Length: 507
Image (cartoon, rainbow, N blue to C red):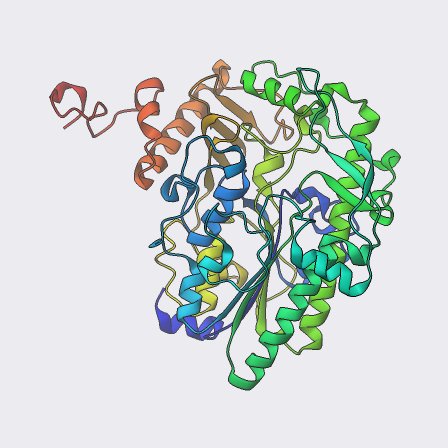
């Protein structure tokens, strides 16, 4: 898109507020159909902006997804493929010469701030990429962080203390991962309230500079939750009655015809060692966690209005990936490319654009990068795997892909996967195991793997070829495995890469 068109539609130097959660299911929000949700702030954002019903993460794991947001590159391209806490030999930081949207914004005169979870690398921090804000390393609320402890002391608030821990039993008999606990602090002492307070403080400073010098800002608030463990004060730990929880149909998962790794992950997350009533309580507490975050986002949105910035600030809300919360007898995330962890909430409100819009195109967290750049009047081309969402927000007629490709590279161990999702069907390629094919119209809970069903042969062949073509066009070398192992049709290249035998390829 030309710069002149960008300026005419967005205005150069649009302020941007980027709200992000971690491990957040779309079905926890009222605007996504949850009748028991306590999310009035995010529902209002959906009502006044655009709700994307098919918003996907490029990969369902924190660090690679966040690196993709920062760069506008798919994980296979930037190669930061695992969380460093469970690293399996991949890169842990982006190279110093890597393009990032934050650098581009700084060069364009923006304030750039990030309050909360970073987790987009190991040694290099948010400050190394030009973000203002306290350094808050780690994958979950760092309740021993000096800035947080100073915040509590200045306000006379009590320290972190928990009880009522919920956990199962590991296969080796040891205690399972902590899944939830009751927090003995008032709401004002929670890490979520602290993050919102620091964000408001930054917003006030940026607003003053915006008024005096017309300097625009990008300010991100990245909550560490609702990632497990769900640690909440009484008001939110008990907000939702477990008796009101309807269990997901996929708790009936048998893993029949599925990759064995899924059953192994279920054991790792101790699902079968806990009563089903515990699963109901965990889901209820998880929804309470979302409600706590919604309240804190409301404080930030109120500050945006109070400071007179609401009419000149684009607001994003999304997350890095989803969460199982008992679906498929799993918790957390992992090598199982179900909708629970790949489809996430995605909201965007741009001043001047219509409100209450719902889009059904397949879009990605990756697309935020080009959208941020275009809002700032910056060429989005360096975000090579990203596409601006602004045409969809403004209701323009635009050609858009009718499917989306996602990827995974491993968490506790290397485990490469690729997924193709279209309107009705989903294909997952698992090189070490059985592939998966789901009919999401007849089986939205993805319980029956149809990959080997004879009546699905045409669908399987078509989707394998489409996935193959997309991967090869992108330069994702995963396609090499597919060339020899699956029916991908005729190829116009030497699949052996030898160049020594003309009979192995079509001229």
